[in-house]
Image (tube, rainbow over all chains, first blue to last red; front, side):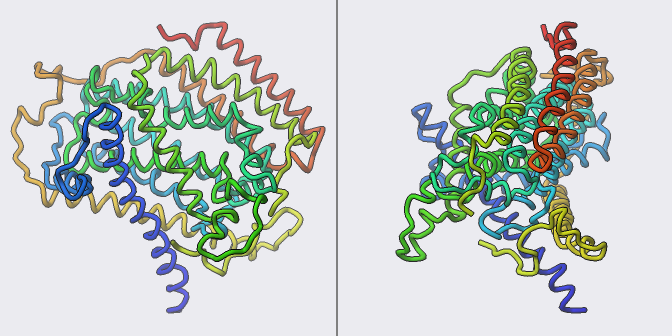
Length: 350
Length: 145
């Protein structure tokens, strides 16, 4: 009995904390990195006062947010107002349960992994809508409506992109999807090449889904001040912040797993030498590769923010519905033909 | 980094493996129990953060502070106003198209086993989808001005 509790409860929770705690730290460092990078792109210093190079800035911000007052507006719905940040946070974290970090380094090797991810990323929009509704403020409601319409529009494009990946991989299991990208041609075996348009659509949709610049009309500071979370303060705001950044990192990891071969090395199959366990991962693959790829995508989020002006709302809708969805539908058929006529090699190097 | 638990099967079962009911249940439990736990841990994290904020933070309510934010103007009595019907229309379109995508998922997984028939059937299915899409487009449901 004791052993069963250990196996069923204690170990899984330790594994979960091994994902969740680094994720929180990653969010903290990502916020710091964002401010630093955008600072450099604006020819400023960025945060540099707290700790060496300003490294402790994010932690100081967290402490500040936690000791601030949580304001409940007088006309707000109390229960929904407090439920909304939870509904935003839980899917952003729970989605990490099925991400494979390496060969057999996965919390839940669920067969329906992609389906679960799609469900979790869709649930995030409830937090936004509820926050806007429960606040009972005009800016918040406007932001929530915009955000909901935008997120569901881009989710369609995202879903069609996932279908293309599934056609090639033939499985909903994320580990299998990575295995399907193994082969002897290095990074040319990954799905980004046969699915190039879909790959681009997926990442841009991911930016839109997380309400990031240039698609941040839901919280555009200069027009509706902060959108759905305008009434939130203190730790309730911190939770929305945490959820948004966890989602950005999640999209970065997903794009790496689905299109850039997850933990596989870009030199797979080119080198077969056995030098030492410390350097072999460079060509045999390992979780460090996944982290490098995810970091590149995460950096793109910041780069976009520093480079592009905000889209107008009708432009966002046109891009999602009239450009991305038709291309993605067409590419589902192209992917079917590629698979059927064997134009791409799937999982030759496992 | 964490290493995966050894009790899991090497590969997930396929249709041809045909495990019996008890086996399927144990596999489902082994794979989805951590997912459920993760949802629990995430909920706990959110609750703890909210609780810290409420316990540590000050609480000094006053009418002006608790009024909805409207850039300094007196707030209207209720913000839950009517909104554009396009949002509603968009939600309906979303349900239709998302359902179609949900139908594509099982097709994509078994595509290899069925082969040419699956490809043709899906081409027809997508054709219907595209006809509906073209109709919606023509009717102007996708216009935002």
